[in-house]
Image (cartoon, rainbow, N blue to C red; front, top):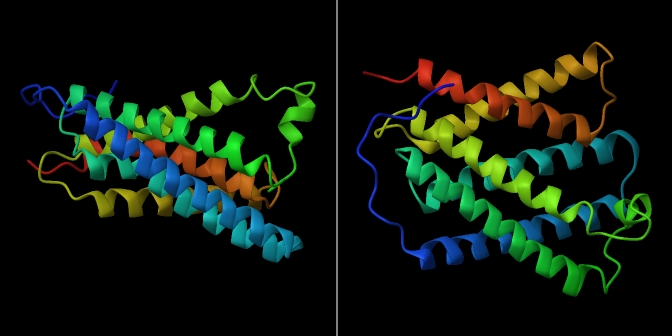
Length: 202
């Protein structure tokens, strides 16, 4: 496995930083989901796929690298704390989702139907996935060294994701859909961890 920078462990992190950063991330996620849902209602076909894909990339960057902005990861401990921020963000979004979005019928509950009318089979998966994205993004940032900037790492991840999505769609492995872009972005995060390590200066 690719190791993060060899630095001394960070001091214990204030739990308030994790909670409030997670709350900000959850609110940002809620706003993004609402925009995604409203725009999807008035679009279809290629236009819908393009707009949704752009929103997926923006949302992916925010959720994957936002925790690293709140708490700059430099070692294993701080990477773990940023993953916790990602988890807190998912929990906050879940509250907004259940209390508000469901009651105003913001979007169709396809996943509920698949689960026999229950949402509890996939919500924990969303929590785990959110922590995983934050963990990978922060790991890639930490691998770049203490002097690495977050925006170049995020931009590199997006570029790799777009290229990978183009390949997957171009050769017919996946259809032209925002889900294909989401898959490509997630895979680019995985690839970005060793890439950041290889590009590290010094």
